[in-house]
Length: 217
Image (cartoon, rainbow, N blue to C red; front, side, top):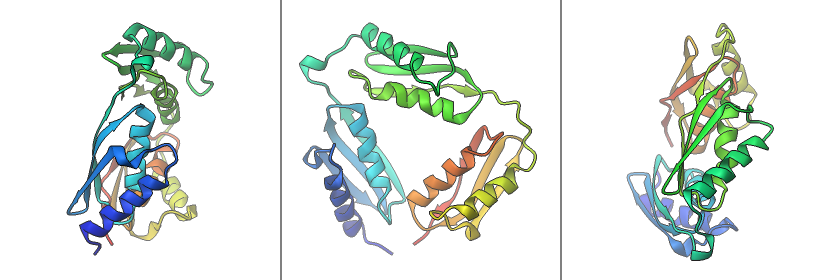
């Protein structure tokens, strides 16, 4: 069992390793394996990268992300400017279906709604707008509508786990209920837990993944 102090030291080291992050701007508190990140950064991407760095550390059971995004005066954008840039970014992204996503911006928060067929399209829409100047947060309310038959989804996911070098499949239980997948069992790191969820999402016909895997060291 790793101590909170050793986990904190590793999280700080991982933040220092990220070229886009100034680790002196981010506070780290660890209690019972739960990492709380605080502070202020000047872009939404840096906020996401800090969380990603913390989640990659062995021993981390969860991340509470309380980092604020504050742009300089030269980077201030109105909601109208952000919305226009977001619409254009979605239009030029080949992974996002045309005319399927609606954009709403309030106080720098971008809200995405609409309906797509695949989870990768939903994620692509979020990635397309989260790097735009002025964006403080992205709320991805895009829903999935997929007509693919869910038969054999469970076996396909289990085989995908077995093929992956990053996932120890033997302790993962996969249950399929229509287009919803539930993952239970044990993994060895938060990174492995996230990887299992991503792998499940890539299976044809999966709309939702309930990730109830426990991290055990």
